[in-house]
Image (cartoon, rainbow, N blue to C red):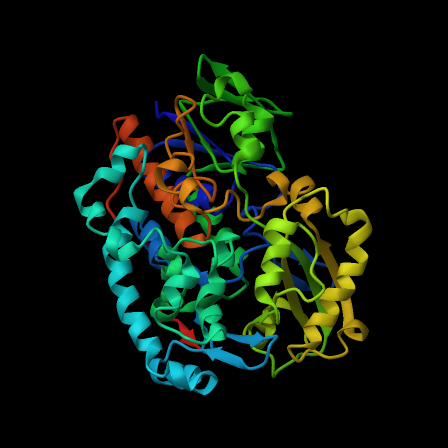
Length: 516
């Protein structure tokens, strides 16, 4: 009889590992609190025919997920239609000027030179240097770090001068670009990790590199459509899904989880994978006495990412001149970051991200209408901010801000609206402190100092998702699933299927992605 694995949570990491484990012949059971797959990478289906991604909207570096699909005999490009964006996004600077990011090297050089003539030629230098960094370090991001001994790998130690762990992301980019606005264009991606570029390790210059080297994509239907495809494929492979069934308790045999319990029943298994929010799961479901390293005291002193204030708007009309993705960076960006990370207060001129997806994908709204997704990075839950009092006023700040990027009269055109605050992220979506990007990614909480993929505090327990190695962001979450699957299968004496299996005939689409 096949051995059984329980997966707590159907987020992107849980879905990816479900596919990989089912492909290896295990009986896989996924228990998901929400009624749909995807976790934060799911779709909001709203009255009136509007559809929004709940969380991630950028689909980057598809190679990792393509290999997961390929290992299971599927072709990602056939299962989900992908549109490569060009321009990838527009960056509007509160202090003046804008930059339209494009993967076309000549056009991007012209964009940088137009904004800062002194930085002419610097984009090419940045890409060449970071390409080398990524190619040499990427293999280490795809393997587990279970102890400090993994750092002693001679090949990794040779990379220290290249990785410069003592430098911040901003100081690393200062070696390429003199204009602070240009540096911000290549460092704002640290917000994918919920961190400031002035504190984020220089390693993460690879994030902006990946955007330009491998493209920014829009999956038709949104990133939630990727999760839906993964859940459909996993179900076809025999994975058992239990939606709307929250895990309420864990049963233990010594230090091992022997079963998970929901309101419906108890589900025994040979191994358990936690894809739910790490800190929330530990503090709610695992007794403190069983957690030697990640006990309540440790979690209380851990550093967590920022949160986000969200508006999802269904509006009449289409702002055709506003790009698919726009990032507005406040005039005093450093001050805005200090409000988020150290002062824990709300900025009056916050930085902001706006997705105007219907210029690329009209299927997300009824004819003559469009969707706007507005994200403002804010402090995670903190006593300084009472969202029951601040939310309505901050909505007005957000609606004022979008005027800065060329969206006019939006208040008069709103036909559907949903707001999500850090309180909602914690209470409705079970995210510890509402920290939407999980544990912060500083040097003290990376590699072996992050919760391990084979969880060190419990037996037969494994982690996937942003709370474990390599970290948050969709490509690395998918990578965490591969790392964890290999560890789990090795522990059970099974071998993972090699990537590159011929695609199944179930695919619906063929061809290379279109560009817009």
